[in-house]
Amino acid sequence: MKIALVGYGKMGHIIDEIATKRGHEIVARLSETPTAENLNNPDVVIEFSHPEAAFNNIKICLENKIPVICGTTGWLDQKPEIEKIALQNDTAFLYGSNFSLGVNLFFALNEKLANLMKDFPEYKVQLEEIHHTHKKDAPSGTAISLAEGIIKNDQRFDAWKLDETQNKELGIFAIRQDEVPGTHSVYYKSDVDEIEIKHTAFNRNGFAVGAVVAAEWIIGKTGNFTMNDVLFNK
Image (cartoon, rainbow, N blue to C red; front, side):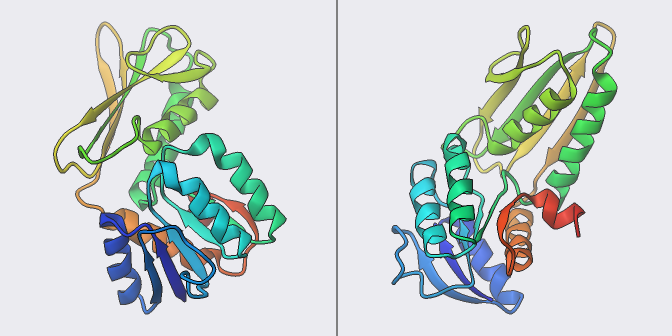
């Protein structure tokens, strides 16, 4: 494939290396706003930029009928509009809060556990995420996905919030520490014991491999997709 990288920070550099090793050609490495000219006619765009830039970056690519894989978090209030733009331009869009295979298995485990625990109100639920100090949004997109998975399966909750769980709002603690790629935990705590599930990333390579696999998968497709489609609906 010919791949354009929109956003060329740490993740962009790792994706560049992994995509090249898998035999793909990187035709653009952009830290600036994409245009029809500087994208250099790619088969697919992989977008890892900043929350404030993501919507415009993705919109431009989709309007040029280029499928987009997006891993930027912190802009999701505008995601429904992006999904409409993808359909209007007969192309494809895939958003992932986290492209790691392990995290997507963790999402499935989280929903299964939430369904098991919904009838045991003596267990209080709390989420925690830890990331590097350079991460601009909080909570992480992965933590939000975990929270949404619990809310979908447990009628005790109808929303999430930063801070401690209270009433019908599921709480997420967001912690920032130097050079932590990403740790996510879900706790169910009662007066007598605690159940915890946890995912710890050792580096960013798992995220990058997943993004490239998603890019390989999306070629020739139209519509809006998630990593569930890539991993579990083959």
